[in-house]
Image 1 (tube, rainbow, N blue to C red):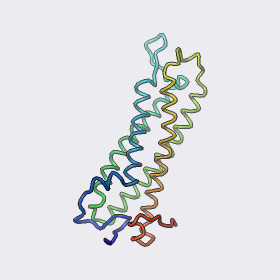
Image 2: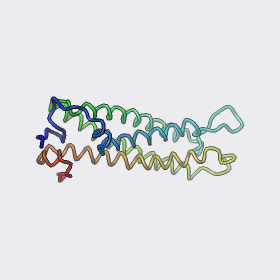
Image 3: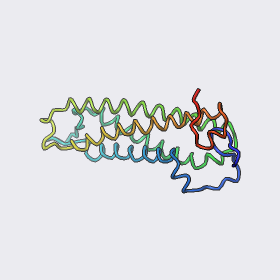
Image 4: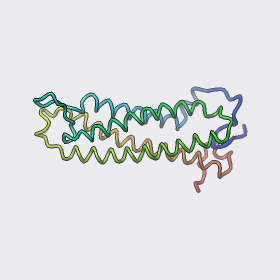
Length: 192
């Protein structure tokens, strides 16, 4: 068995890239799910999140509160870009030879995942509250109601995916405190 390096990754150097192992790794699956959920949220807001009721001004379907739509779009685009950046970082992580760079990458992943999960939770609560306050009279022919429900549902799914990503990052960071072979073999380390 190959000796494990720091932060749960193999030692850097001559590690060939294995696409099958990369795309079946739980961290990669979580990132791809987070990426898809972000796409669904901001594309639903862009496509059907705004309605036009008898004027040229577009109104948000969430209780005509444009802050709700803006918050959903902002967090969706930010997490979409973050997921892409972390997928790229995951590809290059095994070849990082500097221990401080690995530590910074894992810490940045942990912090970003924690902040993203918190913001998705806030967004889920805010959008669900604004949708509850929206009266059926405000939406003729229930225009945008399916998109609003999809946005709320995928905000909730995003909370879960980013929380699991944060926990996975914390386990990777905790590998420096426990025996590195247990982290490399996929066993769950005991968190401090």
